[in-house]
Every structure is written in structure tokens, then in C-alpha cells.
Image (cartoon, rainbow over all chains, first blue to last red; front, side):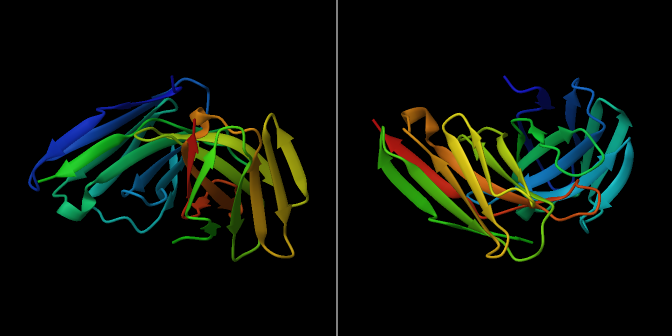
Length: 114
Length: 112
């Protein structure tokens, strides 16, 4: 069992839909991350929140909108996605700040855009 | 963007054999981490080695780091079928230690 919980596990949506991915952790971590992983590729960082503030945005298109309502929750709001956005979206958390903190990952949401 | 390259891309061994995976990277790092990903699952942190360390052990895992060659290796001894997974190295180059860049990964298959 992973300590980072992501919901839903699978999501199919049309290009005009609005949906949200949710991530929750109760390990007291104050850094949370969103990654995108295409099939047979490594994860690519999208966003980093540190102490509930957005600290890194890796030039992600605005159709992806992150939100960190509190220290345990991280959301990714999706709107007007494209077929190439189909991927596994992984959430992770760690103790910040500082160097050398391992990240704990959830099992991801597998997103398919029709 | 991808910081590192891993080789081999795929590795198939018999149970009980040792598996070695290599990772090369391009820029100076704070630390290098290794993660495992089972099919359809998230990543699991295996081991972290800091830039001033040369070797680290954890159970059946041994990691080496050569900063002069910008390379690292992960050795899994006495492999088991349950070790079948993808293995990724990840480099941490950021000022605040929050940004990991993953290598392409090695797919390991351990046959029983």
C-alpha cells in the first residue's frame, strides 16, 4: 500500500470536459509534486508546491491548473485537454526544504483523452 | 528534459544472478536517487547517494557514484522474480532540492 493516495485511478474525458485529479498524503510532508509519465518513458516534473505555495512550474500549458488547498491535499484541474495529454499522472510528496529528500509516489491516475 | 541516460535499456537475468544498471548524467548534482516502478504502479524510492559519497548499501542494493565521470551504478545482488520492474535514476540539481530529473530507465526482468 502506498502512503500517497490518488483518485481516481482511471479517468476518460472528452476534450471539452473539466475534471480534477486528487492527491492526499498524511505523512506530514510539506512538499508535493505532479509528474506526467507517458508509456515507456520516465516521469516528467510538472509542478512543485512547497509549504502550500507553488514553487516550480515547468512551463506547463494553462489547461493544467494545480491547487494545494492544505498541507495534505493536492489537486490538478484539467480543462480542454488534447489527446497528447493522455498519460499516467503521478503525485509525490516529500519533506522540504533542503537537499536530499526522497519522494513518495502514489500509484497515479491513468488519463485518457478522447 | 532528461538529465541522464541509463544502460542497458533492458536486462533479462535468471533468479539468483546479480543485475547491474548504469546511469550517466550531464550537470553537477546535489544527490542521485534510484527508484523502482512495477508495472502499473507508482515509483518506490530505493536509495539516495549524496554528491560527496562514493558508495552506499541498502540490503541487496549497492550504489556507486563517480562524480568525475558523472555516472552511477545500481547493483542488485541475488535477484528475485519480485525484482522485475523498471529502474530509474534521478538527479537532483536544484538549489532547494525539490526538482528531480529522471533518466530513461532500465527494464529488468528476472526469470524464475
